[in-house]
Length: 361
Image (cartoon, rainbow, N blue to C red; front, side, top):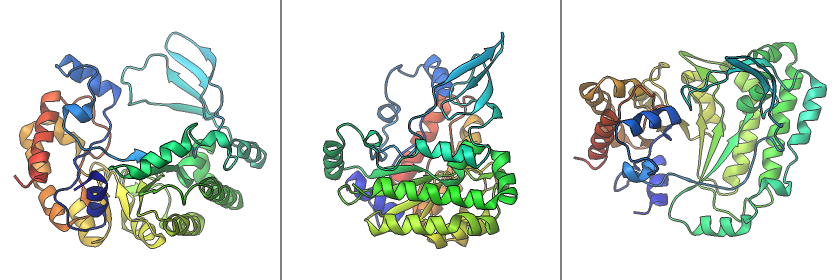
């Protein structure tokens, strides 16, 4: 079975020879530790761990363009105050001790009012040629012939507007200026649709990832009622457009614990799956499958268990993965970035165990 067929059949609850063997990308601080422990420097993790090809990205930029020019405003021995490429002013450590696990401190954001939003719109011109790869038509032709599933990544509503205005500011704006929030969400949905419209019928887009991150530990960042009022209409509009043009699977990238009410609204709006199902945030994959039998799920392997040793890894994998694989619609992998307290030896043990389970061993 080809990777494309295997991936899509798995996530649409159809029989497969086995589920895909994929993993969350390895971040810098973790790889730096593993290299010290003997990992072959420069070798792709997909090759070393014998992983399947994940998805192939459709080469279109749906984010800010052009981005802001980064600028250091001031610095001392430990910190720098600077403007990042999204226009936010931040205070960061000068030295990044744990690459891939950045702690940021924001001081100011690019959008504070309607005038700023009008300026931001100039960086979201739909269908401008710079948004497509220089060899776009050739890339699309090859993607259509490929054996791996194609994926389009969309930085969507909560994710993007939070980048513009800041998390706390967005939360207050839902109350203080709800009309502006709705206008921004409508604008973003219009922008995505109009950027995709010229080519969407010429490329086979199998999977769409809606990047949102609208939840944290034990609760979502937006109430289900607010999602229904502010975001649900745009979800319905965008997902109807996508599936009307052949997209087979739409999933929400949301860290944290969204909860059943928000998950139900996603499903009702046309979402098919969620990722990465973080366990530390309060998600229970077995209960989630019981509550939502047709919700596709990615991830859900508690990253903390990998630092605790082989017995903890055995318990974590064997307590859920075989049961979930029997019911379909699930691709197992770590529930977010692999922490740098995970040894290479433990990770290799986890990959071998998971591979045996996937193959039915």
